[in-house]
Image (tube, one colour):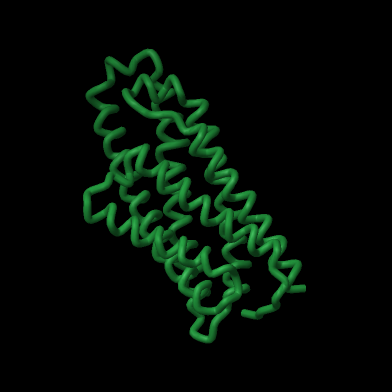
Length: 215
């Protein structure tokens, strides 16, 4: 029974990571209010895919937590932290990817006349989005660090995946200290691709997993 869970959750991680990768490939660069209106369709599609990916990722991490179960319940803590981060990611996608383009599209043709009103609203939306991105990035890093520590110490998955996960946290910390713009489109895209890669590796390992564990 456990092997079936590992396989299904591993496949879920694979599906979620691939959806995230497609999202970042499709995600266009922003710009002026008119630019956001012009690309509203692709923005909506990209962020809708991101939202769809989140339940797959969460279920996959549930299976990973079952696999890495430990007596101190660190795996469960990592799952909760990741869930917290995914909620922040969902809200960020809703704000800037779905709500904002829909809101601005209602003023198509009159954006220049209403710029004084719309621009502060847009800036506020961007600010909220950046705050949510930081929560998502921070929670993801902490969760991956905890999972990776268990991978290294418990010998239930290939250790090099754990070392790769630990390097993500260390690289993120270095980037934070040096002022790397994680919430710029380029910075967020780089982080997300790396995160998706780690999730993909965990998914492959879970699909191949055969050892049993209980939570």
